[in-house]
Length: 171
Image (cartoon, rainbow, N blue to C red; front, side, top):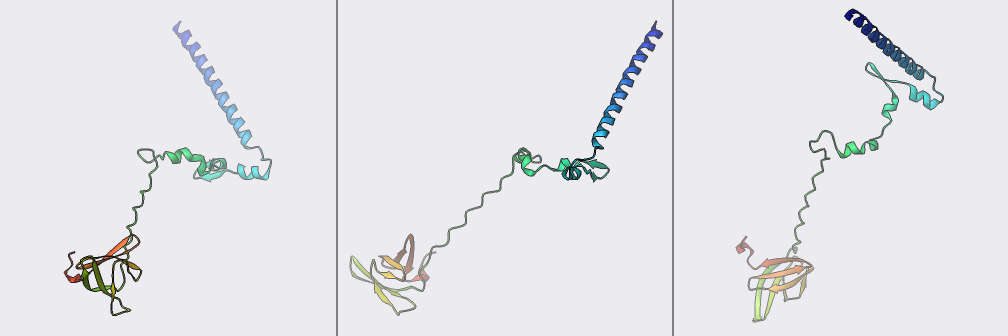
């Protein structure tokens, strides 16, 4: 009885294999017929021409995608551990330009006429020297304050101090 079972099982397996083989051959023939049909238009002719890459013929349809079609891949890059795009570092703010300094002004002397009134003798390249008091203008700068050894000049938000003895000024 076991011999009879094995020959019956053998016939069933052979039938299944024969059926599978027939299906594979039929599928291959159908695919071959679809690929060998002549294209209908010039555009189809160009698109139906296979592109060879090494030993494999690739369909040109595989190369029609645009970069914009891969937004998800660009948003989550494959080769970064966090799967997040790397951001460019923010540029460091450029240092503020140095404040302007009055050109060619030199404090020559200070005179106190009364406890509340001081005048400063300031020389420019254009003139040997002139007396200035608080509020006077010189080369675009306003005399803001006259101290016993210095004058503070201001233009807009910028201030500059002229020392009476600049070689003795503390750094």
